[in-house]
Each structure stands twice: as structure tokens, then as C-alpha cells.
Length: 176
Image (cartoon, rainbow, N blue to C red):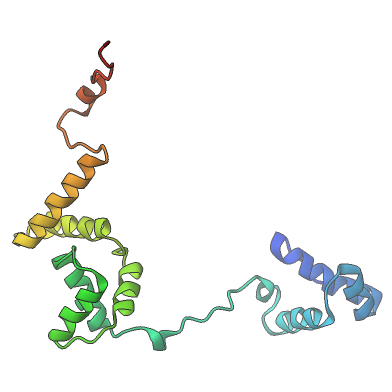
């Protein structure tokens, strides 16, 4: 008889214990609503690795063959911070000119993995790099940051030293 206190494994262990008690695997599987194939997988897992082997394990195996080389990924990240306004096709073309070959969808995948998927995220990364390293901004970077500031103001985000003062805005319309 197998014992466990783990909620996730109790059902599986219960099936194995029921089969032992009844002495009939088919009957135990019917009672528990599980296929015999599943029973045998559980039994083999316990035989190989004990009760811990019954814990749900992800079947997904990372496919590292599809990953780009780390130097390519670093070049894409650096370019995304250098020119945050450029799209994935332009980044791919510009890097190709420098000898770094990556497809536009590859650029997009790298951006998603590194939280650079959209323009605002790339600008945040640029701002973080400026704050951390104190680099001097290029003209295109300054324009991108100004464009973000204008977009934020259009959406109602205002940068102010005293945010409490903005709460007293008069919005009453004048009578006609």
C-alpha cells in the first residue's frame, strides 16, 4: 500500500492501491474511470521514481535548435534599445547590413522573450539604460522619447512635480 499526503497525487495513488486491494486491474480502472494504459503508466512511474514521479510534469521539451545564437540575440536587443522606433522588418534589414542574419519573425520572437515587443517597452528599456549607464541619447532616441511623451499626454498622462494639484481641474461647462 502506497501512502502520500499530496493532493495532486492522491487520485493516482488511490488507483494503484485499489488495484492491489481488488487484485483486478481492469475492475479498479473501471471504478476509477481511468484507462488501463494510464494505470500502467502510473505503476511504471512509481516503480521507476517513487510517488514523486506521479507529480504532473510538463511534457513540453524546449526546442533549443530553433533558438538563434546568443550573439544574434544580443545584437537584436542592442539595436532595439538603440533605435526603439524601428519595426521588426527594418531591424532585420539593418542588422543584415551589419552581417547579422535574422528574420523579421526572429526579431519579433527575441523581442517577446526580452519584454521588448512594443514601442513603449523598447522606450522603457532605453530609459532604464540611460538611467543606469548615463549614456548620451542620439537624435532619433530623443525624437522617440518626445513622441512617447506626446502620446502619453494625448492619453491623459501628464508628468508633473505635484500630481495632487491636477485633481482640482474645473470641468463644468458654461451655461448658454
